Length: 200
Image (cartoon, rainbow, N blue to C red):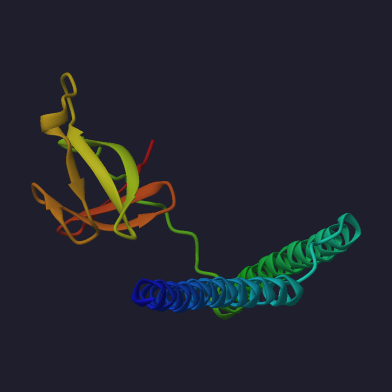
């Protein structure tokens, strides 16, 4: 009987242990299910956010919309080109008017000085002695730093780069001083003597 009681007690303990083990297994299953559920909830939240971002993104451009933008930009560019051409034409016109006014004022000055001068009796011009040749020759003209310059070289012999000298108005070569550069003519002065030399 004691054995019997002992077997019944042991069986009861085994049953209680099995029940507790089952409950613990159920609890761990429940915990893993809760964790999976939480993971699914966070994934659903990410999907919802991605969906919102897609809905907030602007709609893709259609071919018609792109064509309209292209036409608009092209018409703006054409109008800017036309405005630039008109502006350039107006600037040219202003420059031409200024040149015309200068020519008119020169003509008026020339006429008034011609009218103001009285005719002089004709005198026989004194025969000038032959001018001595200049010791240099003018070989060209160019623009340097916004000023016109004249290039000169010795009058005779072969021309080399080391012999070329560049003169600005006011500078001298020998006893000849460059006074002015008037279009295609260089004006030199030595004392009272003035020479106009053509610039090739």
